[in-house]
Length: 363
Image 1 (cartoon, helix red, strand yellow):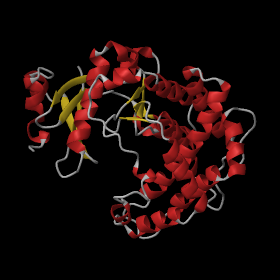
Image 2 (cartoon, one colour):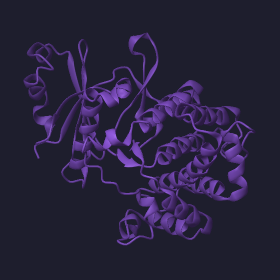
Image 3 (cartoon, helix red, strand yellow):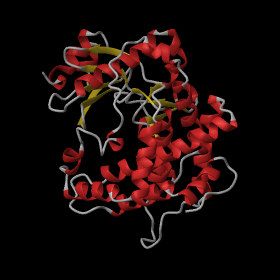
Image 4 (cartoon, helix red, strand yellow):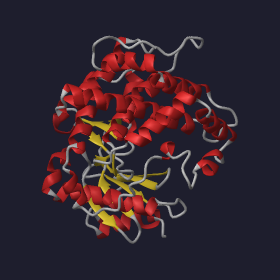
């Protein structure tokens, strides 16, 4: 596969997204990066800017995931059933299936919620509520309309729910590092955690379109049109799945943020009793369940399932923090501790009441 970096400006010119004048007058800059995929930010001092993502041929599944993401953007831009989601996403400008390359509008002068919350030491309640409302909006798209897109959703549950399945993902998971192997063993040795994962797997309901990578870093705050709005990006892990997974990931983001906040007192624990923490989490939850208009009975059952999913997401975060480490980092152990709390019946009830605003949850 030919890397798009070698002829990126020519490609944009051929697509009439950029002019020769832009190229020669020095008003265009390109910033390149690499994670699971290659990506490029093409910025112009005047005129539109672009975000380009290209599958990396050495990474398994990236060609398929880029094609899936393109299909999501195409559906939102052209399909009436998805019209209410258009303001939530950047516009797709072009998809080249031969090179597995997406060209999107670049949301200029934007900051993701994760960085913004770290700068402010907290997430703004309006942002928290909006992320819940956004999740509720795309979860509410009728399943028949999602199926009609005929996209290649893989339909597979997250690896955290497959630790005891056959074929087993354990050799690959344990092989990432010494700390990765240790954290997987720690997870599998805890009866409460194993029971929680078993409940999740048993109760998974593949009912709607889910984002699959629902975290603050994928929400951009933009001031377009003179008002703050949120855009949800990075849809390559979208799937037909359980809405509780996205909601659980959204709830887990609060714990992850709080644990990773820099603290001047290195001997003190993160504060899960802080009013800003509880209020933000409650705002997210309220935004979601209010938008979906759940009855009290339905909401209570769903809340229990979401707390299980939150615990599962914390285990994933613990594993991710062990990448290339020989020893389990302190933050990873904190993530495990939160997952254990959420899996324990007594502590679980405190968090359930906290979500509903009945009382402040206690760590």
